[in-house]
Image 1 (cartoon, rainbow, N blue to C red):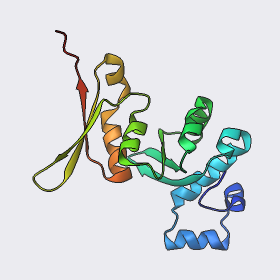
Image 2 (image 1 turned 180 degrees about the vertical axis):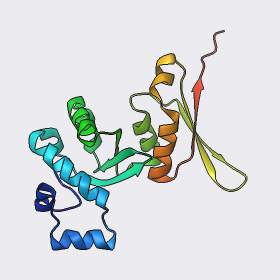
Image 3 (image 1 turned 60 degrees about the vertical axis):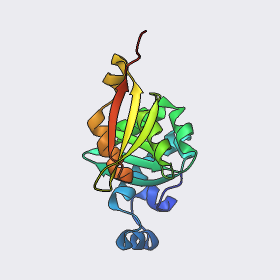
Amino acid sequence: MKTPICNFCAKTGVLCPEDSRKLKSGQITDLDVECSVKLSKLAEKDKVLDKLTFVKALESDGDLILLFGGGNLKVLRSSQETLKKINEAFGRRVWVFEADASERKLLEEVFYPIRILTVNVVWLPDGSKLTKVILPYSRRVIEQVDENAVKRVLKTLKGIDVMIEYERRQTV
């Protein structure tokens, strides 16, 4: 597994001079180091994780956001067992995304496996924008979506203010 710190540091948990310099300069954070070490230990036992590139970690009100390299999410999502191990290792809710995802792709990932019907951008009088996401209306979908957590995570990741609505099908 590739991480923001070198393999030796990720396996031992002790930073070399180069990685210490990255930490002091702000290129990486303590959270990046902590996550790199945990993910590297998991990757020793899990071949799916061993193929991935971990880029960055962020926190959002107790939740952990892990950003991986492009194309890694498909590989990671193909193994529910690996995702379960990651959640257990960190002991809190973990969100996984691709680091270079577009705004639309990010929205699709945060609501996965729910299909987004429409995304609209509403420009507010103060110049800010609100992204309106419309999901299919069903009890299962409403129960699956933690609206507050989704709003928090999107705000932390890309500064996206989101409004979630559910479409009701009209019967004629």
